[in-house]
Length: 333
Picture 1 (cartoon, rainbow, N blue to C red):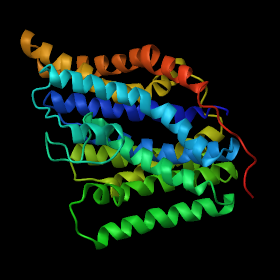
Picture 2: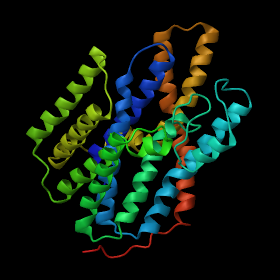
Picture 3: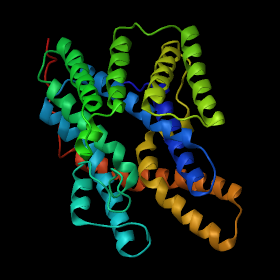
Picture 4: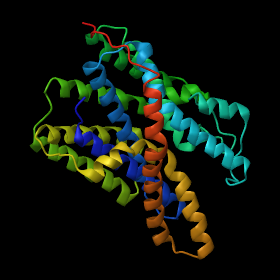
């Protein structure tokens, strides 16, 4: 499938936003808006899955195998590194339990014994619980004719969100899969359908959407306003839609560094916190000020992710690809 460079660069930007968010958090600074990178990732995920399923039809089980091959091995390895570090005493605040470890490895939302939050052992893996849930529902939708898949997915996810508003419970599974953030996947799929039909707006509208998204995010950051997916979701959709409008007008070419960051975005997302932790600990020992520590943590987190992409993710992906072939079929009518 032809690379959509604008989407690739948004993946890079989203990953860097998350790295800066965690680096700032660990060094006493404030960049909470960097967490919006997750919302951008979710919209992009919905977009990519819909485009791939249209251009490269596959059966539900083959689709799930392909997604597991792509997501799970690297995540499991990062989780095991976290567990090993916890056992070795490198993460003194980490409390381990067998139940929580198993739930983390199986992408099942569960409360962390360390904090009581609905987090896996590797905290940033909470987003993968949403991703895997989306993949399961998406795989089930592949059994439907193409023209019914998007309405069915939208109906399921909207119903879940409404159910979450109607029922008050502390159940981790229920709280996770009824959050409004799941609608970002559906929004990405809707944008993808417009893209496939060639109905994306022109570059003028694209500039307005991208600028409006960045201004909205900047306003939230500068004014330190409260935000959640109900605010960040629409801004992420604006950003993705606007970027695609510019893409269709030929604004983006293959640029080496942004392409690399986009390729490595998953590894950057998984591994950056390890590097940030090392930088913060070393900075405390040598007495480095918080501002340079933030900069070093940002660079180290990014470089660690890029290194992990070349050393871990890419070899594992290549090795498992030959073992899980896609059983391609004709698209359902």
